[in-house]
Image (cartoon, rainbow, N blue to C red; front, side, top):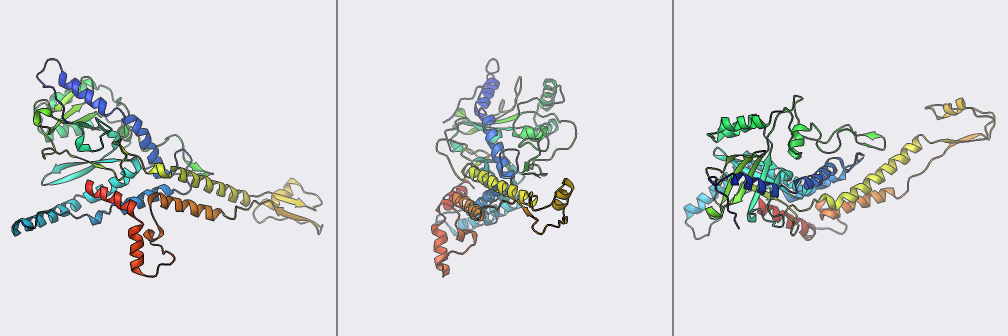
Length: 448
């Protein structure tokens, strides 16, 4: 389970060509997956997959509630375990290490970052996290799955992959800072080569999620030219996206970090960092072969996935289970609003009046308006359509289907159950009604 990496001293540019080939193979499905991620993000933020905004977005509350049941950042505790036969000083040091790791995990906001990754793993089907050392501690950062690729998508475990790739798009100033942090001897040559190969102001690399955030403006998800609306109600709030100053477009480079199981190093990871282009510029992995995680046999990436899909690394979005329910809810609420609006401005049926002119009709339909007729049998009646008397029951049934899709029961939502008279009975109902959530939470605990 390892690859042979070409030597930099081989004739031609075998390392550059080999690295580019592996990167292209890893990122082959990124654009196709990006379409799915965009649609899932639209349902999460707006409750709809088109330009018509949802009157009530149940999807976001559903995902946030499920994520909160699976992982609470305040409950994270680490323990370093040894056999009870170990000396007391070893057990005491293990307890101190566990307490220190728990404190660092909280101080670096890694607990909150991991909880947010659980939420987005439900939305996208998977979420990646990257850990890197920072001084005497560490830092955890999210990586969007569209900017990540693996060599074999049928292998579920990230540590069993022979190669995987992380793509980012730093600006030239950020790239120079990265080179300075590692004291790269060819810093000036690399920057000069990038500037020579990228003479234009506008970035022309293929679109990815991060590119849209850097270049595309405030709304990378959905249509920027249309304003979402629902039955005449306009949604003036766009989909949240990282803010970008209103300045000229900053030049960015496509930075690919390729992690490969190196056969020559006993299967340990070798990191090859490449500035993607023509030709590719290798800034790490050409002269020295090393594992940048500083832990032999381990990478810097963590895969977060509460629900795995057999035979597919990227999994399946939980929104696929409730997308049609959200569409049904949108339709029912829009129909209900149309009926209410029609009844507010309902036409009148006039009977028995001596004569009705256009001026008299507009008087009666205006606010506070009325007309008078000497005929005692004259009357004006609104033509109204009453809503279905069972529409509230239908909406309640749709909401109940949302809860059943995630495995929620009324007692897990803090609601009482008929027939429950004792706390022991309630605790038994909680334990027996949450096996689906327990399975997913256990998987999250292993990944943490």
